[in-house]
Image (cartoon, rainbow, N blue to C red; front, side, top):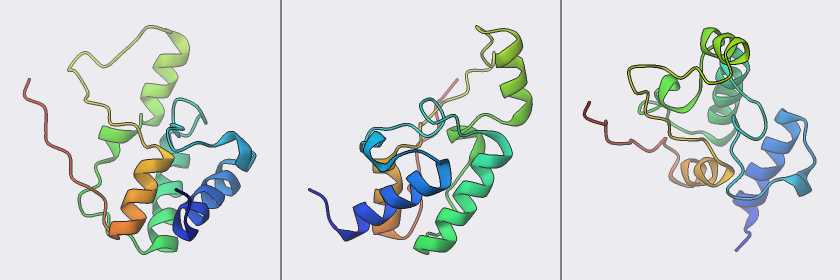
Length: 113
């Protein structure tokens, strides 16, 4: 089901990430598929929150995106992953739609290690 809010979120993602709207699906992952990470991801999320009036109180950057240093390590050593078991919750177009609809970022349970 495509409604006005879903279309607005998809258009925002396409514009901000510089990809054709037709390339996006609800399951498109911003980091893995569109290459959004580090400072660019931070700026994107802040712009998204301002545009759609989303409360980011529950947003934890390192749960959703790699920081600049991790990106460099990944590029140098293709198989490098954080040894302490970073729990990754990919930011998808669907997750952005849900946050925009609720006007707050969802909280995710922490993983016991």
